Length: 333
Image (cartoon, rainbow, N blue to C red; front, side, top):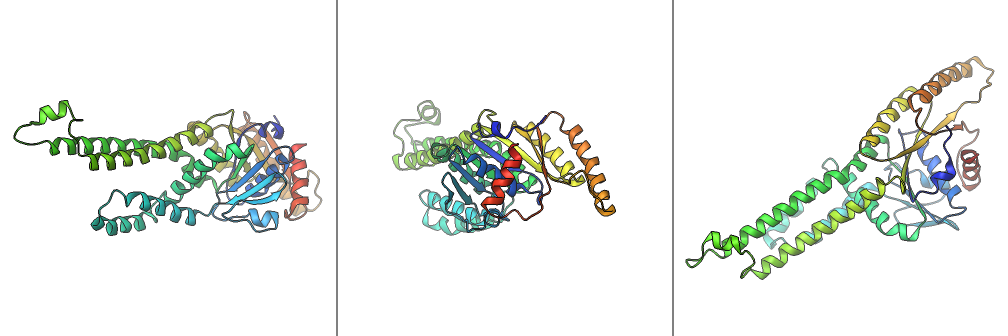
């Protein structure tokens, strides 16, 4: 079953992923350029080792740049995203922390910058915001993702953050309720009475801060819920794996396909990159060809239920619009 590239362009969101070094960025760029012939496309790199600028032969950074009439591109720097994310958290928390707590809060945020998942959480928030606003401006958003493990952690985060935010909201509600009870403990009132009517004579300053915190948490939770709905909706989003016919990429892709299936993200198909031509004279290349043929047969068997597309090994470096146009034609024919 051949992967129909035109059908991919009917989605609103494409994620291109795979093991490092298999050509994800090249395929993502070629697909984006091809789609931009008929649609307004935003191409976003979430890979810390950015290659979009190298592939297009021009500078691309943290601000959206205009590449062709319908193609725009953006490179998200995980380090800068973490810094911006923590700055936003600090700005929000300053409203709820006392002057004596700010120093400790800053220390915790500095430590959390190095914690596992910090980059993924910051990238996810930026991606969620891009989906929230970008789909009104662009017909298609294509994410050139980081290597497989990083991307799988990223896509599993909405579930984790939703559960974490639920816990914070419940804790906030309990703290607010306890504060109301304690504020009413006078000789004339008892705990049971206050618990039965917690809205009487509340401390407006405390209640206002508590409501503001809850609103912030709810807004963040809803943002991630919207992103999750889009990414898990097979009519809007699809994941395309890129791999080469070699042992490690095949095994890693097999595990990744199962992991995405388990969390409900549609895998639309696979692009097998750098396939050697069937006729090669020298013994050295014949040996490579035989190994590739073995892994191509393995790929056909392992991924029998998924559309596949072979992309031959190119005879030149993939740099610049002309070469990317030609690669997009190969993907589409």
